[in-house]
Length: 329
Image (cartoon, rainbow, N blue to C red; front, top):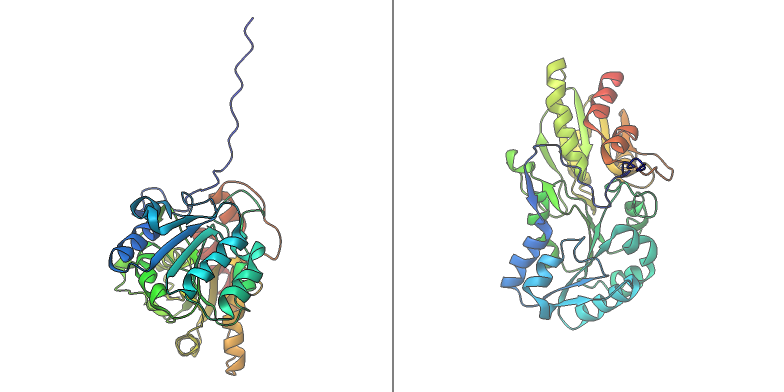
């Protein structure tokens, strides 16, 4: 008698997509943007710590094999090498997973790159909750780690538009940068809102009188979706997109906080040390008393699983944002 065939159990992929079914996406926007920039600027070079395929650096590598350096699984060495390349006038983009660039290689980023103010661009994939593979790969605290590093500019893009426009500006920036990379098939959202990325600036992409979402990264996509849904309940929600976490555009944030709207900060990061605390501190230091509720990941190691399930469980889904607004109003 033939034994019954067991159904193979599957789990969420390492590189899972957070795009909604049928949503417009762009393939590997970072890799293609870096490749276009490299055609104009011969000083652009790329490095990876054995993860070129999974950080979209393979697009640059395949087109520019003589300007790409595969460093193997040695993130500290990669950042040290990137610092050396910058010292001789090249402009490196060094890619790996966010957990390895921050937890594992922080001392090299801080002292080899940030302290001398070198033009090294660190590209971290799988920021926050963008993989279902658990705490070893979920960089839920990278902003908290890096916001304390002097001289470092930090960018958390919403979509492919942000990434494509940010890459040349990061290369032009005199000092070091850290980009929270969305890779693979990345949603295209902000082209519908007359938006342009400007390093160091926040942008009001949607006005509204009842609620103000202050969001960054992929959560701006979610807050825009939530704002559209809330219209059916006669709730008018504004969305302030904050793609540059450091330096923070405090002037724009304060301008939008000086109303009587409910304020909800939204970030793909732990509630500790990220956008939520930065906005709350900005308000407190300016003497503004306003209601601010954080939609952020909890201060804990997160579970493994499928991304839609995890985003709903931890409050990052569009449904969760809508429910939070309705409960608060």
